[in-house]
Length: 499
Ligand code: NAP
Image (cartoon, rainbow, N blue to C red):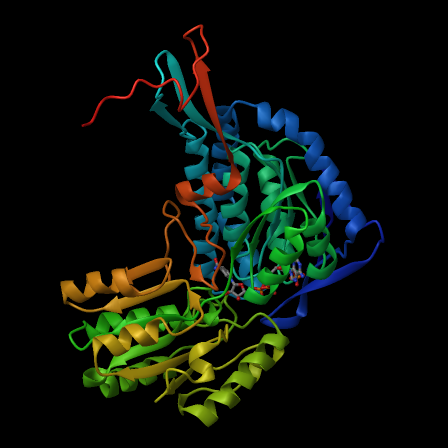
């Protein structure tokens, strides 16, 4: 059943001013229209930013513990609706239901974590260098935040951006991915049930070029938090520079799992299958490179081939399905083009084609694909494919391994399977990435540690954990002089003679 959805602006659900709409369809079955959505323009963005600006004084002045109480309620409501939201997500973007539940749970976890921050939002107090003077730094909200999100984590990512923004006292306008607007709108409806005041959270659907650009260029939007493709991030960052916005970019990845000769091969295999083919390989942290010590290479590749041959493709709502569809036909074409490149660069072990048999023909499916004998500098080993494709690279020694791990332009997640504690620590020191795992695949970050990557994966900011508070608040250093006289910092100091 298809539903018509609207934008949320200042607490009211409204159509796009142009009256234009677009549909979101299920990637598992293109005849299943999930909903019809406003195809908004800059005028709708203006209205939403205006609403967020109007809501800002009251929200930013509300004591943070009170904002936290609202977020606690939001977290409870999300938990009550977890199954409904997860099913909608599987229908709209395809990931299997168990993974969709994990996606919603991540938003719930961040909501609880940030709700608790309402009673902390720790600043700093330090001794002053002058007598009778108090020195501290406090967090201040910034203003209206623009949130631009991708389709692959359609609830977790809006959640992990929005909740820290709100607890710090900002108001927000969300522009969700055009492939998953239903998930984002249902998420926002539930937030409103939790008691978020009108105008504090607004959502405007529509294309990246119209709605996204309008948010990025809007003079009254002070912060942009973006997750998506590296090329889009560069464009956003360039445009946002004109209004000196604070911009956080979480971008692509080309993440390796290294399987050393002493690894627990069964565990490494389970983790590689999960990390490479979970969410049909459409995670920024997906293991798209498997760097395997030559001593165990052939055994590992054969075991991997057998496991992948047994994976069941299908609708993520069917509990027999291991791997769901990819997001749309454009993705199928992109992945197929990379598979063709791969055939010229390496050995195809399994897969390599779109999957169109039977019911799969109704949607956008691609066979789980493994390439072996991949050269470290092959295109399939260097570029983000964002689909169920992984490349096995054989290595002989540690120095070569470190060089290959670090040879890509991205730096999001890295993983090493070994029983050697020395190598484990060396991997944490030497692999260039924002997330480092030992004896665990490349996916599965938790809500209370910083999330993000190095190099072309981002611009140095981090999501969630305490790090998110730094991005969504402004530091204000405060000095209170109770000496009753002029005291000049760095000048009126009594130096201790250190000679
Ligand atoms: P995308 O094409 O860059 O789109 C992301 C969002 O940006 C969408 O809402 C899109 O709108 C919007 N957008 C597109 N062009 C824009 C522009 N010129 N100005 C403003 N907004 C614009 O990325 P995607 O395909 O949705 O997501 C996949 C990518 O995200 C992969 O590269 C993946 O690695 C990355 N990702 C990174 C992380 C991380 O934390 N590092 C997490 C998840 C995903 P439309 O949908 O309307 O085009």
